[in-house]
Length: 268
Ligand code: KIV
Image 1 (cartoon, rainbow, N blue to C red):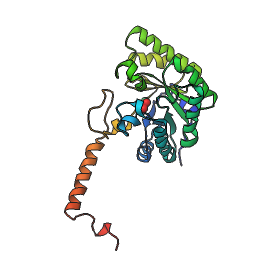
Image 2: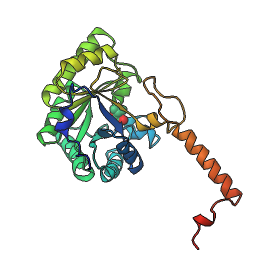
Image 3: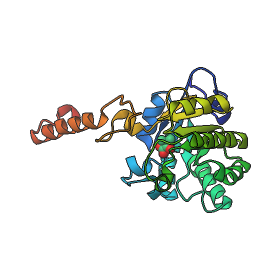
Image 4: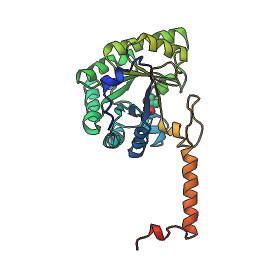
């Protein structure tokens, strides 16, 4: 029998349930199919699309139209997992009306169940407006890549006592405002554990240690789909890039040797 589709309330109810939530990014039909076949609870159309699919240097370059183009593909391919779409930079910074309209495009056009918004206290008015439009919101605190210029690079956040206190306050404010989960990225494990213990919604960690209510990774990192180094927190479960290159080398050699296509691969 088919598993029922994951909903926002069901996802939220997994807070403290024992079995951690599993979230993975997806950007197209192939990554959605692989993630769902792998049994993830939630697909995130992350704005990491900018880096791992579109070749931009930072997530500041990816546009609403580009995000929608990929979110629609994931929406068409998704069968069961919760679908969260990342609000790209400037899609929620120019006022709450703009933010609600952009969030609604993900729901209408891409069949997203929720959107993700980076930032703490200063984003509360916009988050409230999106929630008022009945669109669930996932928060995102810590190393928020859209703040790369303000942070002066991709640095672990919340290391000082003051920074840790502010992050905890932000997490509490987001949870009280009504987000259904919060991504904690690039913060010390002890701070992530404290946030997890003190808020009522699931925390989803990435580079935030093992004490969160769930984990998220970028699928390209998990599967080794790109060459080059990966951040410390990534564990590679496959070498897809190397295996793909090797498969292509074998196919190219067969073509050059006229060993492909064979009789069985040709129409009579
Ligand atoms: O854009 C993204 O992929 C993300 C996750 C890494 C949390 O925001």
